[in-house]
Length: 315
Image (cartoon, rainbow, N blue to C red; front, top):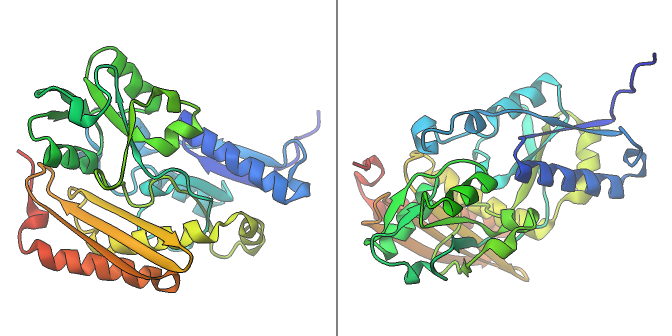
């Protein structure tokens, strides 16, 4: 019996249906870009369980908030058990572990949140007292800011689990990312898309990122053709904004950069978890200034918030 040949490239990913769909998308793109990776067994997908996948009885903010879906994958990458990792960029901390870099952002999908409900077409149509389930402090706070008459309850689990709980009547409605639903071919479950003017998305929502080891020049060269420049610029601006505000994982933050030619427009939001107070701004500049625009927006919002804003704790 002969040993199986070692794969040329090992992709690390979480095991949820959405995470696997994203990993297979990256695999397909790598095969298309590099004929030597198209052979059977040339690329191996390695599923890694993360803290965020294992602890489902508490909200993300209660169990740490930062790096819950990346820590174990980062460790596998640094140990050499995998070569690259595929992430939903909204889950990736703004500071990567030493030795890892983020060279590649795929072309970004729809950034909007989706309203999913069997009883109403939109958030505005929900009767007072309805229960909206979400694991996201950002979504929950923006819901309460617009509809303080609704109840927001924690709802953890993958997309399929949350939709099942909705069907069982555990909650009256839920919100999910349009990008994930499209990647799972489940956009038909959406009652309506929520425009960013009504609900600002999470930083880097809809973007898939690929990390690699800083010193792995061969792998970095393989990833170069997959990088989408406009999406990368937008994500750079949003992550620079988040990096300034990253002091509290209990503070709901939204951010969206949009690019028209060389003009970048950034909108940022900080809001208390109970929706009682919000600060928002819009800045415009050039694509080359993406990170500066993001940082400036973060610093300006920090100044507007004043002392005590980030110390708020939900009752």
